[in-house]
Length: 331
Image (cartoon, rainbow, N blue to C red):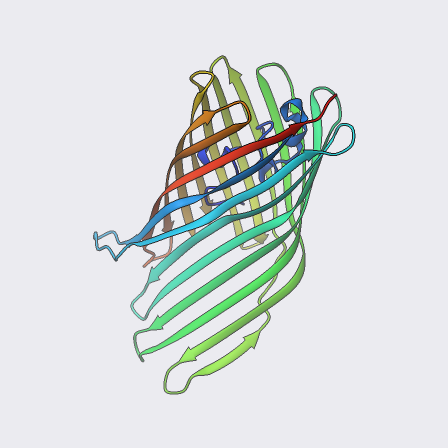
């Protein structure tokens, strides 16, 4: 499940992209979309946050100091490979958020980061249908800081895990105006798992352990409608890590074609889980040249916990992406 802005165009479309054809970010959302890349062009795509500002809030209105940050979101290279086959290499930091809770006995801060590096293949089934497959290494890091109020003490828990990740996908251009896609994400095998807990009180104690490594499985169905100067996208996802940890998301995006040199993109995503919900809104302006295009825009992301004492965290940032075409293969 992709919870922060990610991909190439998808970052500006509220992370909607399972039925989006010919985007560098297809490797994250539905690799089958790469098979529809126009003219079989090779290209390099980069995306990131230029400035991200986050802060913590409460229902009573108390705010903490904000934090500025920047990070890469996506880097990918895609090229034709043999007849009717395309290969892509990529790296993406596509989940990064912080959760806060307060109770009468403790305060807690949880920071979660997730990255994916791998390659994707895509090919034609017919003139209107395609398949795709992503093979990657899924790396995640979780940092939990707990402050006990009575007695006064602190505990820092740090986890790192690495998984083998598989993502098959299908895409079908049903008509000139309608496309549908299906993508399955499977965190199939735990490669490495390490955890460290440091307890600070009268004496500092260090404990090493192996965190639980539940295999994530998620399914996303996407729709795309081409309506003259508009492309409308809608993705619905459901995923679970264990019988107790299930979540779903709805992503909506719109791509408006304003002329031969400029487009406007915007979108919204809502993710709901057992203990939290997150909302993401994004907007961008795409500038196009013959062999180069760039997009720059804004995103706003909020995190809200369901538990008593959960705090609201929000993030505002500038996002950008750019794609460079290198050469075009003769047909």
